[in-house]
Image (cartoon, rainbow, N blue to C red; front, top):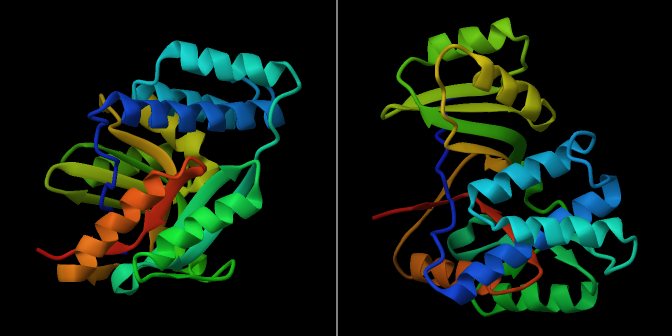
Length: 240
């Protein structure tokens, strides 16, 4: 397919306040997944994936344990999933995923992020058709054919595989996440996964630069400051 996957991981938190925000977002998501699907990671694969992701991002164990304990109590807040779509600075496509206990408040907060950065919030489905919901794995390696052979032997469904600058990226349907992860982990290739996540992968990129780039960075900062925002996906490609 010839697509390149640009890793857009959030920069490491440099302040205690920023770390608290990251911990809070993981705690909320683990709580919701555990409350809806059970607190046992062995039977709740979504919970297992989220706990592994939290540990990889160095979320303290007591944050995870507190969220699981809260979910097992049966009470607590009732969070709902809210997704907003639209067009950011420079016309790039944006998806904003939230967990909220007050839809009106969350919508107003996210809408203000769009309004104050010359962006446009759209209706549901406005841009999601421009993304593929996929499992993505990234690791160091130089021969994608060897990796592909190992995945085929494990009977996995692969959408695409790329190798660029000594880094291999595997794309698969999001339903194949654990099957592909196990195949890579159990292969004799000594693979150490740097990225393992389910995300929205843009079908094509939108290049932004100059004032649009400055405004886009402000846009992302504003969204990341919203307590209810969990993830932001976009197709912006930055021009130097």
